[in-house]
Amino acid sequence: ILNVEQSPQSLHVQEGDSTNFTCSFPSSNFYALHWYRWETAKSPEALFVMTLNGDEKKKGRISATLNTKEGYSYLYIKGSQPEDSATYLCAPYNFNKFYFGSGTKLNVKP
Amino acid sequence: DTEVTQTPKHLVMGMTNKKSLKCEQHMGHRAMYWYKQKAKKPPELMFVYSYEKLSINESVPSRFSPECPNSSLLNLHLHALQPEDSALYLCASSRLAGGGGELFFGEGSRLTVL
Image 1 (cartoon, rainbow over the protein chains, first blue to last red):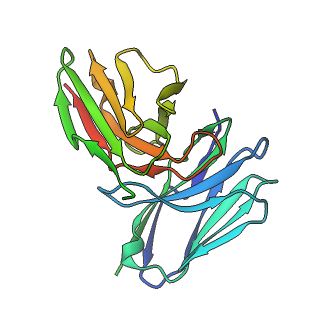
Image 2 (cartoon, rainbow over the protein chains, first blue to last red):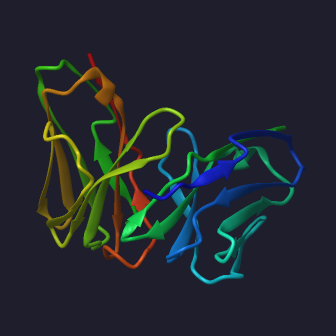
């Protein structure tokens, strides 16, 4: 079992604030890392699939970086909007399995 | 069609009941997954099917019985469950098993065992 830690567990920000979360995972035998966005009463949706050390991916106001040598990934949201409110899950992929973190629950207040 | 459809959305069952959860995808994906998620915990892998064959069973109790009748369908048969089995059951699919490709999830089936 891979120990995946996400921090913070929850986050409350005002509309327009920028924010970031962390995903930590064992760096050995790394293969890939996924970020998923999970809105309440909906299905988790993939944001990013990252494989290379130093990878940076961007989708609109959301971006992610990956450091496989030290075992962490950051997710950044610039200028948070209420529609960004969701739980953000990271999932390293290793040994043919995804190992999910418990997620960071983001609440953006208008 | 990029949807994974799960039914029912909610299920309440007694410990002696037999019920099934169903999952369907029409994306041509050859890998399908069952995950279990309890409140404030990460989704936990239960089973993986690859090309309609069970490839991973994460030591799940036999009261959970998966079935993959064809490449589009995945069932989870439930029998003699315990109250601690109450959870959200998520189905997912990916193009192939292995390789770390993107997972496509359903909205889940919320199970309550009385």
